[in-house]
Length: 370
Image 1 (tube, rainbow, N blue to C red):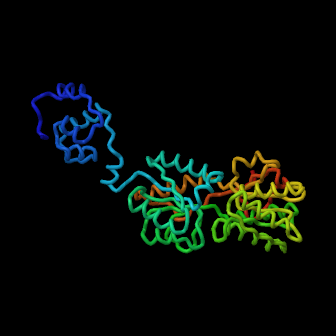
Image 2: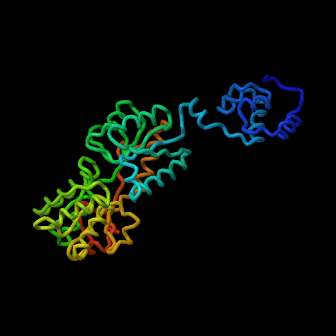
């Protein structure tokens, strides 16, 4: 079937371009181009062994009928899906109002598209579901690699992926192994930086509201907070835990205000927690920042619209997402050259929830206040 026909290519083209072939398949392409289906497959996969005249006929048919190969079928044959996965360590209902994940996902989508990939998002709904989610996504070849967020001190997901040498990148820190790619802020330094800023403003009763115990990003910011208190000989410390939700922030703030000596400033693990805590303070008749100051993290879009506007640490979410996505795709495609652990700089954005002094921290000159 692959031999040359006595009819000219032009007369042959007129014959098949006049045909209407709905749902064109490789078998139909083979019939119209007068080649075998195997030859069509070889042309689609750029196999150099195909006769040039046969290749031209196949490509003419493909162009004439705007044929698009079935992506799923191709991926099953090549074991390459062209999809990367983002696995979020939250319940789906907790993501609806979270201002961190929207810009993160948008940035990952943008970079993925630039590199010719799609994005699949899934959630770790509970401990029992973590293993099946990761095994299904990778072992079924639905995705070529994974981006993980919100690691814990011991994270079964990471341990299993490292053991299986699966392609993944962590947005965050994991101290139990060096055999992984990750991108993060220096959250310990950032926690110390914002606490130093509050101390420089004259606050001496500074509290910390974290996320769930054991989540590394929260624990790292807590460590920085404690280091700043110790370095400045500030004896007061008060630590409460939330769950990255507004209600968690409200309850934590209520507990802080019930202390015999309540705080005069609060460092919160994220902006949602900080905003909810600040609302409780205002409801209790406190003035912000005169009576109590608040600092959050993520520099969420709503920070400017609060009353007063919320001071926050910009962690450069778009840069975190871009770096992680490019690292993962480079890993999938076999490119080397990136460091194993990338640090994205962060800085304080001062607003009305704190006094407007500019921090002069000799240890953190790279964090420029905006």
